[in-house]
Length: 335
Image (cartoon, rainbow, N blue to C red; front, side):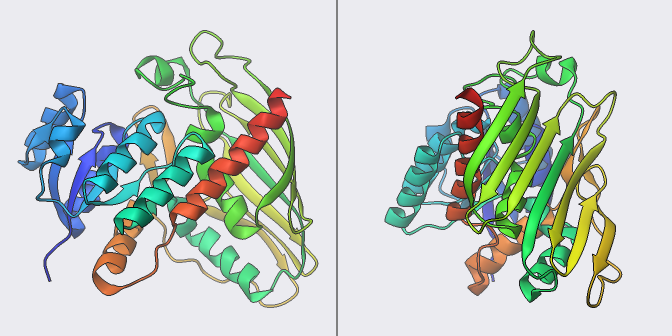
């Protein structure tokens, strides 16, 4: 069976991660970035064509899939163009910066009869997988409440070295860029959100970002579960914690560490979670870390779907739900 041929739109830091896994599991066919130096560097590294214009890139037909790794605010535009050009699409998080854009992406995929994959790699964290399995088995019983803590560090250099991070139009906000994976896990493990109440503030980044660096959120889920989110990018010097704690009638569990990589606490009525499979390290970006690097699993799923009829790990509807929840939070914060 021929290997899947993938083209990349966007040649920034996360694209380097994509390129490596594509080369290992499929074929990296071409890359595109408006910054010619980035496009040329990645293209020459893999000895493949590089482009600086999306339309010209999409006329290069030696591809099966387009992976969208451009700035957040361009995800919808690039995804829709790639789908209309006849390609399946894998879109990085967040799916888009508005639920209406997400809906257009889904409708375009259906109209073009193409598959739309959304990157939510934290679902593959070993501790998260194990807790999700327990929830699905009913081992925690009725879930009462959930607490999500996101305490990371993003300093001035992180934003100043980028031509789009920190901007409302292309970045969108801290919940979109830093913590959308965490919001996705709330939806995946607990359910959809009915009500939100939030307070947000920019304490330490007023000169470099156009939105908040800190937030406190209370949630009511449609199934009655209550939840809280406490988040900031002001943890001193380095990432401190990314954790989710679930309180249920038959058990309490906490997945923590810097990026949801450790099973920190469990007390279950029945059999407790045993040894976890070995996980991947965090995504390294020089001065800071991102979420656990599970893009290998993302591409394994993509290949399984396209070549073996498997099920998409995270589809467009689930990507939409994350954006809807973030919109609810920001709407409640802005009154």
